[in-house]
Image (cartoon, rainbow, N blue to C red; front, side):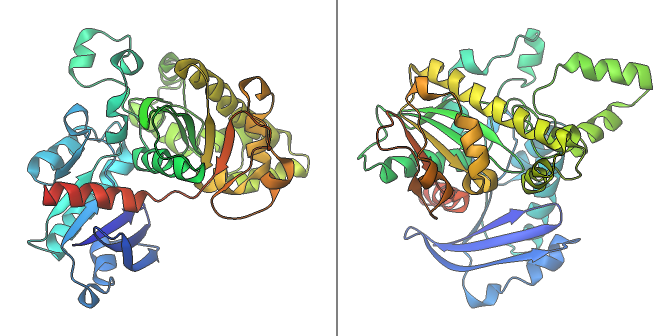
Length: 365
């Protein structure tokens, strides 16, 4: 079965065609400056290989769709219903799904929701202290980056030479322009930093992270902002960009500016590393210890400085970096010191292979 996995961005479309169940990549590509998905899809050389299914790394479908499902009107309705919770993500995937429906009529389309991996969280970790009617309307902690955290949960035991994830207490740090951390025990998610929406948790490049909602109400009241204006600011001008004053909030730009003496850029990096460090400690408490910490994503893989800052003062948890290993080497690797009681792993993630496997299982069940 040839499964096409499109990765949709606001102005980009990446794709990978995967032969299942072998997992072999048959074709891949990327288009930038996309203004119309239909035009971008037309540029994919679909005539070179048969496409048996298309699977989307869908983001938010509420409680009903913390799973992988064939796309029908019910899935589209769920994406529409939670559009306000993930406006950028759900809007992009709604447009992309409709474009592929037109381009590949009759080909099964599948949504592999980012929230699926976190469906194993216990209720006490997922519940919010809201009025009961809010919970009835789907307000709870869902968690995102599920495909990435699932891949980390499967790959790290292999890197460490373990036969199984059973008994392992792993903290997965997906750190990039969008960042989240997941506590994984026995290969299953038990807690994660993102909650009802991808806005929450760690500071992201331009998204604010955790924030007292009454700060939003306060600013709306004194400035007369609409909800839409407040949401726009928090999604596009918050996070590391908001703290540093550097548009885009790219950590590479922040590190360069901080090295040149920019105090706001340094503050943004320190705040980000502090939140990661604090969360690792919290998740060690939640799991009764930690056996490994994994770093993936653009920042997690490529910033030795951030990895060092995120693990500073965590020797009491048995986490000790090897400074030389942390700053050298490529690919999936162990960067903890030889005597470290807990392992520190750096690895690339592969979300496409995870969602392709999910789609294959669904369609061949």
